[in-house]
Image 1 (cartoon, rainbow, N blue to C red):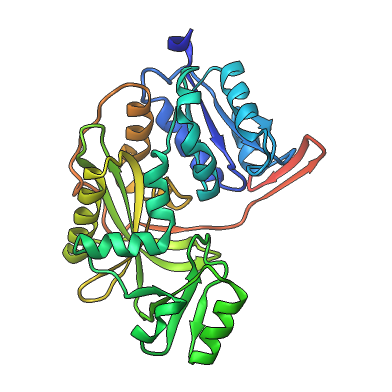
Image 2: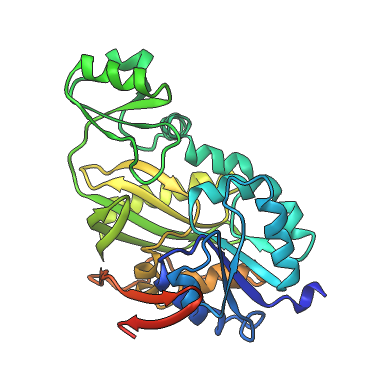
Length: 334
């Protein structure tokens, strides 16, 4: 029965319609999935992404104690071959239970728990980067803040979407932030454009997609305007970061965030696809999402990481879905 599983499930799709539409396109190019459906699961009764999917399902919130069990039941009942999480909190819940999904024939696009923790724990990642000689801003807990010069940047050790971050201009301000949030970290303040490199590590451990893009306009941690570039120094740091993470066992999609300084400096790594990956997927002519789905379905992909379109820009806009309960009345633009 497991070989009959040919559907894809996106969790927490929310408003990311573009990801859903591009995953549907990628499925048509993957033999094991080309006759399957794209489903979206959310705790909301209605989401825009769910409307554009083939089917939308309701599951408990991520933090609910029955979330994993109910998601497993959904995968079994709906013949889900590949499960694609889009947010960090989902990775934290899914990573320890990958075997539970594998037992019913579902591959989750999520690394093992230790790799999820390595990239989500910003202090641990900073120390990892230092140990691997990867350029990274000086980062420390409040007890070591004397090693930094003001102003400094503060952020949560396991934060998401830039929530709880900002700039401290004095020791008193830093002390207040540390008192209010014990898990806060402090980092040397860097003022430079931010670049994200969307990448893919194949099952053989090689990088097959590597698309750098400048984050021109960012809202709540999400890129609303972003464009692809070719920058040898950025690519070099990205490939070295990807290589050491591959040596640790990381496989699948990731995005490497860095400052476009001279030389570039790492910010963090996310071990998942993000909403703006739609730009890198188009720039790589569909190879990014196709690789994810192909290898999750048992195939093997290769490709030249330097093969992508330069100067391609993503400009996001708001769309509107009008619905009464579960009945959609209008979609603008349609």
